[in-house]
Length: 68
Image (cartoon, rainbow, N blue to C red; front, side, top):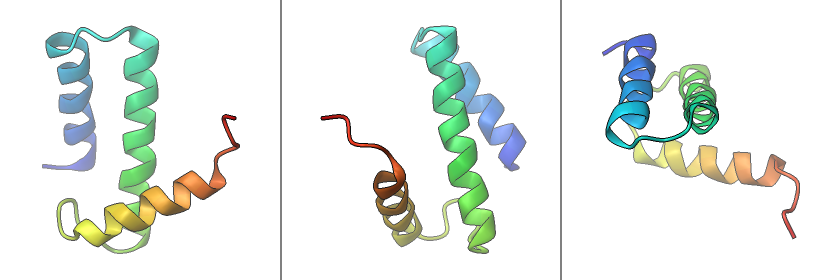
C-alpha cells in the first residue's frame, strides 16, 4: 500500500471504527505522516524495520517540550 493510501485507511479507521474527534484524527494522521516521511528519508519501506520505529520515537521524544 502507498503512503497516501495507508494514511487514508488510517484516517477512516480512526474516524469510523474508533469514533475519534476530527481534531484528534487530524493530529494522529499528521504524526503518522511525519513518521512515514522519516522512513522515506532513511530509505526504509513501510514495515521493513522495527528498529526504525524505535529510532523515530526516541528522536521525536527528544524534540518535544517537556509536559511537566
